[in-house]
Length: 278
Image (cartoon, rainbow, N blue to C red; front, top):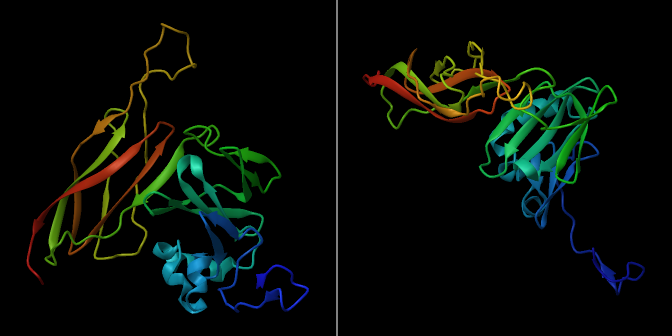
């Protein structure tokens, strides 16, 4: 509708009727600049773009397009459950979609880096709802306790554990390759070099991952008496090659980490021998 006074047809009129995919949950709206993001059965979509296309095609322009398969699978499993929500965390340039697995019991989150558009998944954060207070992000646990998110590089008193698997690449060649070596590149405590698993030819099974904890040297700030303990070392480039094995045309790498130190993953080099086309 458009106009100044809805009590009269001369001052207010119907402009158009539009259909959008079914919204999910009560907390399904998020500001996106001058636009509005809506969490729907086809993903997190732009309202402006959705109005300009059919509701069935809305998923093609969704913010969640890169994870559309996984999103759709989860929507079919728990789309009517309480706990779906989307929220932006500007302090860390994150867009978070809260996803209930078992209503009021278990949740995980699909998380997008707003700068790059890359997605990941947070697990073991059982949050029923999220909210910002100033620049800080909080979530309400299923136990009725409010938790502050992102206060340290640890999960309570435990390390933060993460699993990484890259997208597949054929390295600009359709030839068969024998992968022999890998070099994950980190900024991390000296000597850290987690073992890399190579998956080949778009294998979707879960790769076997050996998660290795970071062992920080020295003592952290404010945890020991001044001038009597060794200082903890800062992050250093980690450039160690390691043996890895795989045969195929395309490859993906996977590894696991467990740390309360800050780690920065920069990429991974692979060494391989190139074979034929068969």
